[in-house]
Image 1: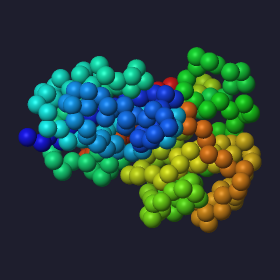
Image 2: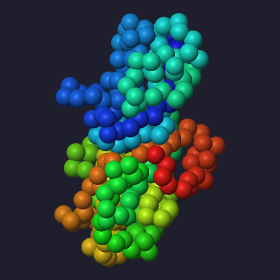
Image 3: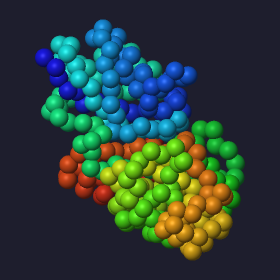
Image 4: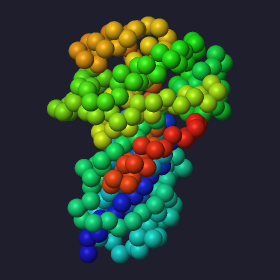
Length: 262
């Protein structure tokens, strides 16, 4: 009998060329599918709640696949972890309704980006983007306030983005500071390609005094992004949680853990 299985995955993105399978290097999707094939002897396609880019991490990435094998679902997580590299782990496995879809059923996604304010490298420090120059947190908070709400986010996506729907409601854009470590949280039903990293790049540009409020509004309202706004590096970004019902949505909106979080 065909069963739909939900997996919750955690991985260090620095070990992979993103989620989606490709021929020129290791990906999370390929690692999971190879592990399933090692157990079942057959190939399956695993679908995730989002396609993280090269170097982006996930604290709790939901995914699903359809399974014909008779292995009990309560044994599946440990069995898969036996065949997976150390950089990725199946935290849990459960059987779900046949119509449940890791991507399409999601109603809330939470990404967190960490920034380390330090002039000296910290090889054993948190996963974060190290920014050498002083940041004005008041300006960064102002930028985040301007991003929150219902907007056309065309000015914050990559040129490769193929989404036809660019108007989104960003339910939260907030900053939490813990010493020299900053965490920026973005919570929305869905995101455009590189949207979080371009938003972070813009917020940091405002914190560095490279752009002001008026220039920020031109990016937000007119999609006019200057060349000095760069895509923040992937190592500071993590998919924290995905919600599938109103209770999980509220849980995500109420979550503001002190960094570091991943």
